[in-house]
Image (cartoon, rainbow, N blue to C red):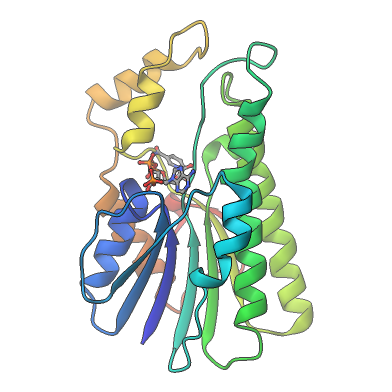
Length: 241
Ligand SMILES: NC(=O)c1ccc[n+]([C@@H]2O[C@H](COP(=O)([O-])OP(=O)(O)OC[C@H]3O[C@@H](n4cnc5c(N)ncnc54)[C@H](OP(=O)(O)O)[C@@H]3O)[C@@H](O)[C@H]2O)c1
């Protein structure tokens, strides 16, 4: 059986990844998010608010049960938030804690626990972190989001280096999934232009039909993840896979 642990499996890209996987035989998905929207005999849900660090600490063991008959184990850190769009100096301080907790601190704790729990087993192990193009360029109004995704990229590169030094065979990747037709994009399009200079550009992308459906992105990501043709680059964009 191939086991997948996916955060943010209740909607958007995470749900599409889970549903696409569940169409395949020999897969089991454990989804982690505040809400549950998938019912399937091979799906298990762990309700968890990834912005609540105490809840994360107390419930992490439930996210990584023993899977003794696993032939592969994959953690997909997909849950992410932009938080309130706006410029630094005009935000409540809590905004930064919230965005960094969900986008960086929780994924780091999940990676750490995944690697510790499943160390020394023969099943192939992969961690896929869902990053963003905003990690590589400054986007006004998205400072915390951009910085948290850039840190996720740096975390991924460093952890891959550590796994290579240890010779574990664990693969770590940080993937930017492109512009997707999800609730996150609705949030972006609703931003007032004094808080985000690119609102019109994102409205045009939507109206021009340029947003990629989550199911399409999920199929492409999984075809790459499940192939043996993965290149050694850790930080990658969906158009290069
Ligand atoms: N959409 C894009 O164009 C785009 C572009 C680049 C990168 N990305 C990245 O792709 C990933 C998926 O984005 P998406 O567009 O699918 O987002 P989305 O539609 O907004 O879905 C976000 C998912 O994250 C979960 N989530 C949010 N806050 C959470 C919390 N506090 N605790 C637990 N789970 C939480 C949500 O579940 P609950 O609400 O049930 O908790 C939901 O399942 C994110 O990492 C995002 O940064 C998206």
